[in-house]
Length: 341
Image 1: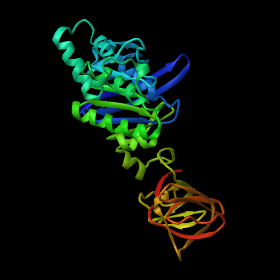
Image 2: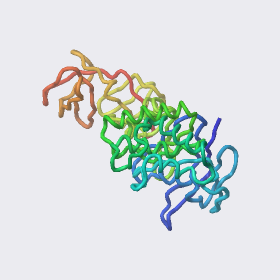
Image 3: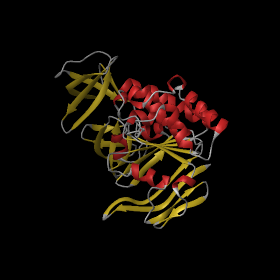
């Protein structure tokens, strides 16, 4: 069931358009990741849903209710059942964990109920031993947990997260991604998570929406977007790939490298296409129809990534043994996908 829907939304800051004819849905009790380059409109989508901005055209619908439309905010932010975690966290430096959480509840919740909900939120995020600690005395991960506790203590239906892990180092980021997923499952939250990080998209998202210039290129499960992109932009944004121009003919693509088979998506005969080839779909063998010279080699830990080139083309392959730059490698292509040229 959809909980969030944007219909034909336009939004601009002054004369600069940011969102154009955007149609978007997010389902209840799922994590939907908005991914795209800087300036693609990701954070603006969150601001529209939270109620910080109103669309100039179109409408924002939450749980079947129009909350903003055509330049008008119908439901104020505090009435929408939405909480936001920002990139800079915006924690109050003079307040302890306990004081922060109690302050968020406001005067409407008092006495035993206030204490119970403060204790509950701090326990859920693992801060029960830091109740009298201020943000400056917390680690990066603990500050992140405090921001999460502050967001969930009001028991929202929707949690909006705007690149909340961007300032954490990679190992801690992975830990926090697991924590966010556990939190979502435990509380039954609907999360809309903004990032430009591909790994966060795959680890966290039930569904992903790739944004470009204020519009959506493709929506679906992250693995589907990776394996079956509809456009060259989606293919290249979600991971390393080669994009070779070609013409589709009778199940094959005529490319600068030669005829490529194993095409996972057909096109009209004679149409111009781009062929997407992922490194894991390039197999190095002793004898094969394709060959090229090793241009560069990068270490990935347990394997190597070799950049292979030939006349008018280049691609990447994952290999177990480190090849020497300049050496000749023979390979086959296990799978390729065509996208619009």
